Image (cartoon, rainbow, N blue to C red; front, top):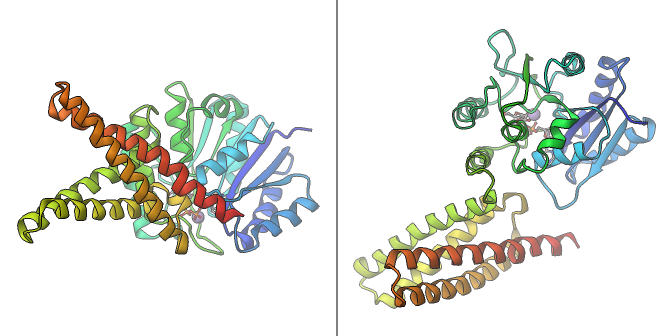
Length: 369
Ligand code: GDD
Ligand code: MN
């Protein structure tokens, strides 16, 4: 038996909130054929146990247990992918989203008034983002909203909202183009769906968090910028590759700085200055990638060191390949800058492809065992 509405709730350490959420859904959705799917990324506080005991008592409660995975957007997408319902809602598992808005959202979709209904904290006629958000978080939301409107031409008063309901077809039509990275699932879907999507916004008051703490730190702003870049380049390049190249470019700047300092400031020989610069850039790039590019698979402790060693090895091979190809092209008459760029691009693709599978993915697998 399929349900009419599936509510997808990403959860990470929300043990004390989810039972309450199910009670509230039950109260507010009386007369509606609904189910809830909790998508848990291997919480350490016993969230899964609570999901299980709720699911045992109630057929409307399901859960997905993801191991070695992280990320709000992908959790929401995977929750939706398991449902045969006509409508999907996404809401937080910490009671900050006002569940009493759900019946009205459903009514709008059923009546065909929209394909997507968004709970907005920043509508002129009501809604409130105050809740218990910190000042920085509020600023991120406001700045992000600006960017979203400006760059993606998405006209939403609250494009960063994580509270919305869609028709299942909207998911079907966008699931192959959404990036699933980061936490901006709504913006991701809207940007992928294109102009024909009919959107309606409903104001709500963002409540205070009852238990536990927020998982979204300021690094999410970085993820958000990447999502925007990715949408702008029309999904031609994977977002991770873009991050990797940005990190690499910063590394190149550092390289030049160290080289100049060694040569001019310290009077080293070129070879030594160049070697020191390359080592500095490699270590810097490794940590930058570990912090940002592979934020969801971040290596720690002993694996952090092993990762540095393998990353350096891989990038050294990349450098040799880069230099050789560039030199060969230069010799057959390509302009120096084109030969240099092609060499660098090939080196970057190599470094990215090999390090993403060998440094980060492999370390994660061995960790899972
Ligand atoms: N499965 C999974 N994986 N769930 C996660 C993850 C993750 O990596 N990170 C966070 N969550 C869950 C949390 O457990 C919570 O249910 C929900 O996602 C939102 O996370 P919070 O940590 O409560 O985020 P917030 O309150 O700071 O963020 C709110 O505002 C953002 C806009 O600024 C949320 O409403 C977001 O959805 C919204 O985008
Ligand atoms: Mn929250």
